[in-house]
Image (tube, rainbow over all chains, first blue to last red; front, side, top):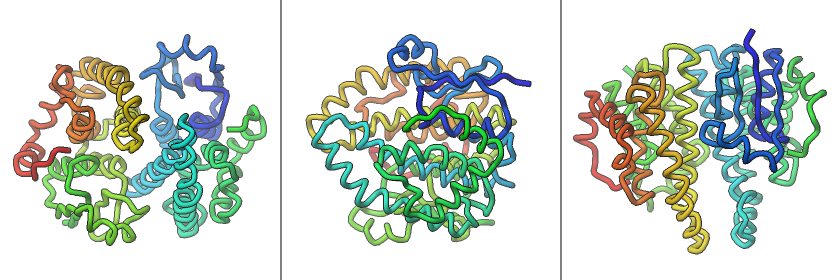
Length: 203
Length: 203
């Protein structure tokens, strides 16, 4: 059996989809959480100087989405054919567009431009994307695509706490189909037990 | 035979990888180029209000990377197994990290923050990523991954003009392995003839 070692910061954010997928697959993994002050001593050894990194039998994998898709294939959560795989990929890439907009204000350290961007995100971007996603999940039986659970759903729900934290509100609250999506993902046994035992963090 | 209609702006940027892949596959496609002033009348009808959109037999597909990966599978340019597919995905996602940094200054309309971000990109981010990519291509026989041509290579070369335009210099010039990668992609017959006949645009 391969050994898994995941390295990230002490938050959910972009590592949580990987933690969810490993848990779904019932894989044991070492969950290394690097404190901000220790990061400089790790950075050099990471591909392209970023986290999360998942080591599989010592081989370094990077990029949150690529890793989650790969694990999703192992779990048969990547669609029944190329067309279905495409529908999942489209949804996840769109989620990243939304995340980029939210992160765009969140990580802006210029007070003035930050406030302007935040207003646009809260008034326009977030309602736009969340309404569309909510509709899409309504049309797909409680999932993002293909009427069935996929790694895309796992990604969405795992990263949602991070998005909600940046937005300042629980994104599931006003969107009932997204709430159903969340319930569907969190009901799967491996993920359920991970969420019960994981370290409690805000984002 | 399916019909293909690609809608984007009159530039290469994020549609060019799709144009490259369709050309590689020898697919005829309608290449709709929407002028900026006409965009508002199209926006509503596009999924999530964005371009590029590829219609396959009238079905709308969106998201540049998802579409290019899908076409890449049809062309057998998506790796021989899940592990190889992952290596390609990791490279492309990293390319998007780099692109996001470059676009981060390019599309910033605040003069002061733009200048600061641009300096960081030109002095640090771009040399960092391009050196790493150059090394990676050197280690993979002139390709980004797996020692073989993939849709990731096609994506990289197709989007490079856009990156070079924003950076203000030809990114292939100083990085000889990346130049080899470019030559390898542009030597494939379908892409070669597309590049010869495509509309001439800066980015």
